[in-house]
Length: 115
Image 1 (cartoon, rainbow, N blue to C red):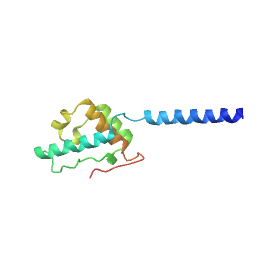
Image 2 (image 1 turned 45 degrees about the horizontal axis):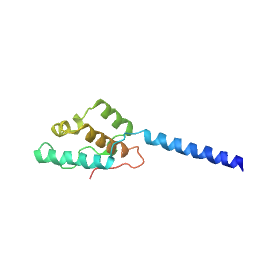
Image 3 (image 1 turned 135 degrees about the vertical axis):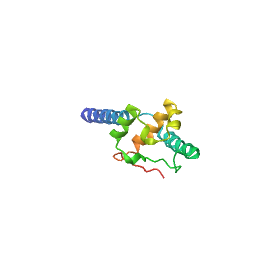
Image 4 (image 1 turned 180 degrees about the horizontal axis):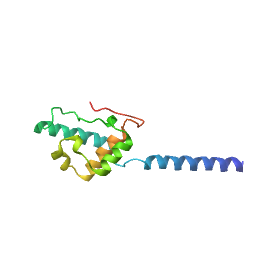
């Protein structure tokens, strides 16, 4: 009886530690808000006439999680175009967009393409 309790406790500790590591790996912004903000950037940019489409030119699945991480660590947003809109984003908005792109990258469990 005592052995089963110890094994159960060890299993529970293992599950909690493993879950904590998985959560800590990526950015901690709001990916749903990031998706909305990311699309809003391109709607405003298209309205201004810098891009032809209101749809973002780069989809989350165009890069891997590691590539998104490097891009946002270096803060190199030139590939996205719409520099005026990107310059107006708050740090929180950028974190949310990063979270969205990272969580839906090509090698993530749920890759996504912008529509």
